[in-house]
Image (cartoon, rainbow, N blue to C red; front, side, top):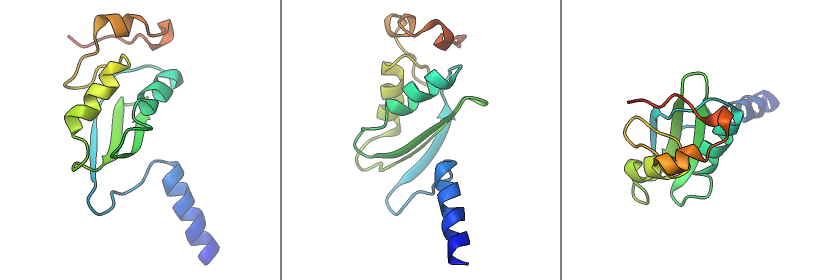
Length: 112
C-alpha cells in the first residue's frame, strides 16, 4: 500500500498536479506559444524566481499554472517575467523587440 501511495504522489508531481501549500496561491492564466521550446522558455523564465514554487505551461490550451507566495511576488510581476522573455499573456504583452528574437517556431499569432 505504501508503494502505491508513493507512486501516485510521484505521478501527481510529475504531471503538474501540485497543490499550493500554506501561504501559497495557485493561478492559471493564458500565455501564448506554440511548441516544446516555448514551454521550456516560459517555464524557465520562472524557474529561479524567488517566491515561485512551480510553473507548468500546457501547449494544448496555452494555460500556465503557477504556484507562488503572494507575500514574495505578485501575479503581475510573474506575468511581466514571462513577457520579458517574449511571450504575451492575457494581460501583459512582450515588446516587439523581444518577440521578434524568438525562434521562428516560437513566433505565435499575437493577440490584438
